[in-house]
Amino acid sequence: MFKAIPKCKHWITFNEPWCSSILGYNSGYFAPGHTSDRTKSPVGDSAREPWIVGHNLLVAHGRAVKAYREDFKPTQGGEIGITLNGDATLPWDPEDPLDVEACDRKIEFAISWFADPIYFGKYPDSMRKQLGDRLPEFTPEEVALVKGSNDFYGMNHYTANYIKHKKGVPPEDDFLGNLETLFYDKNGNCIGPETQSFWLRPHAQGFRDLLNWLSKRYGYPKIYVTENGTSLKGENDMPLEQIVEDDFRVKYFNDYVNAMAKAHSEDGVNVKGYLAWSLMDNFEWAEGYETRFGVTYVDYEHDQKRHPKKSAKSLKPLFDSLIKKD
Image (cartoon, rainbow, N blue to C red; front, side):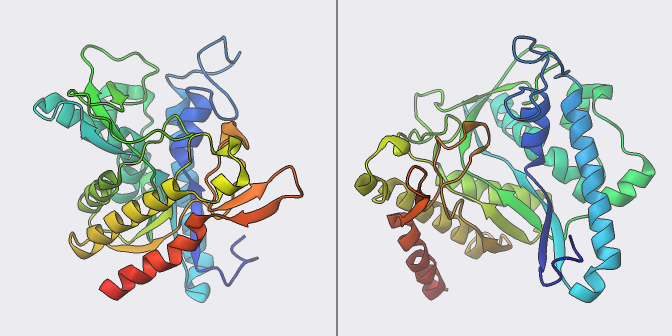
């Protein structure tokens, strides 16, 4: 691949390894559908398989980076990294130190699971404490491959959750870090409006907070936001004239991009690029064509005809306005 596309200057080895590992080998929601729940799959061990899969993905990432740096980067002059997905976290009860602590643990189980080995050469202590020997150990050879294997940090981000700690011993198939993820806090405040995606509710301040959290933990690396966007509740069932007037998505991008700009200009976060998800409606994992994220409507029933939405026309003036401010 590196040889076939020599003009490419930015490479990503894996996109969202958390999804491949957890949703593919714990919950069974994504392919290949492995899970301990025998009502869903005849194969799978939710307590062990996802951690082995994640470990192997990290080692494979390290090998790919080594190959690029040794054989192609000297002549092509590009950069290479991995893209990790993760949500922002807010404590369900800000006065409860266990909820505050659980917020960090949630990010560690979702993002630092992959980022800590790349930046520090080891898994997070919180994961080792809960998972024990079910979490693989890195050999010295693997540490040499994985540690330092990011030229940039690729960030996919969409939403946020309130986090409430749990008491007692977590079940072996727990992948969150012994906690609950909620859309309402202790006082009944909702984190954001509903969308078509059951897991996604907009909360732009969380984007800024997470950019800061990651930057502080990993020494202010160069960050490319490689995915950010939203679905709209019921969009697939709307008439075309309503679909193209996607003010909800326009507001999402305006709020999130401005939050990112503040993280850069006021907080010192080293954001170097931003990519909205997505240019066109497309096949969304297990949700198929039902959920739409595109700034361009694709008419699947009439020769894939494209219709730009209001959000498609809003992005350029949005970034133009930010450039003028700088």
